[in-house]
Length: 418
Image 1 (cartoon, rainbow, N blue to C red):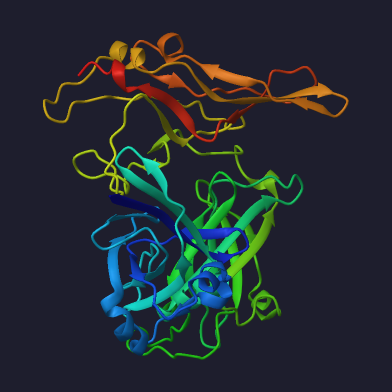
Image 2: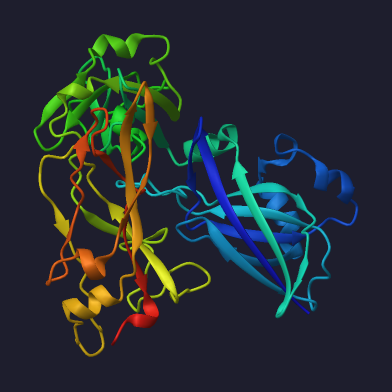
């Protein structure tokens, strides 16, 4: 009998901010015959999660059953057979040879480090091709941040809102600085997403810099003292410039390697509201740059292709953007270089919900009717789709267009005439 153990690993930085473990080696081991399996299987994470010592690794090496590697979304699949597994409980570990998250400037090589999560009794379900069990685990911030510290990796997670409306501010750059005696270090920057959230990941050397760096870095035992600057990237208008003295506040001084912060800006200073251009970034939840192989399959363990109707997602400006914008899709057979005509492309894009209209009904009441778009009739002869421009929040007015989470189109793969 075959067993398919599918799982996902993610780690929390702080608050609701997390990331998936990437390129981590997941290992499962037979349980020590002298252990109380029932007690271990019901124990809480804080009682079981720990870094394996060299002595432990040596003692469990012969009990290794199978292993796999997580993809960029933290997914893994381990295939087992009744030749070496009987469906019972097992120990689950993961090993990190490098820092298990994306970082622009990787830290110096360290490790590998191995961590024990828990003893697990999978809930197996019968499938056509064998037994299936699913395991989804989120590592608590206390453990995940300790893991990152082993790789000298530091993370800032935050959210930017409008101080008055409390709405998220999209597409602004957030710069983080560390107050230093000799010179203030720029640690890195991030750009807010559709929810106003940003993440900055940087190596510890960024806040240990001196005037002689990189030849001489001073490794202070303390952490960075944070202050921030927020810039609208199109106009370069500075929306927030904190004084460096803020870095000496108790909530900003000597912070650990995971830090969460909420900031607000005056939304009236942002030109044209949401400035984002129409930009295609994802097929469903799969990023078109990082989640696909050169042959067009997803690079996760399942090596998926797409059938049926799939969502083509990305970024759209809201109705408050003063710039008229359009977008279109071109579909080309990579083997033959044959390109569909605009009419064929439009025929392959069924009607979809592009967003909503926020409408002022009066008396403090607002409605949110769906705004649907049919490329076959609404796109021009060359396939260009015009981004809705509704921007009237007066009582009885047409309303303001609000994008539907970045839905640019739906693609009927069966209608692609290649």
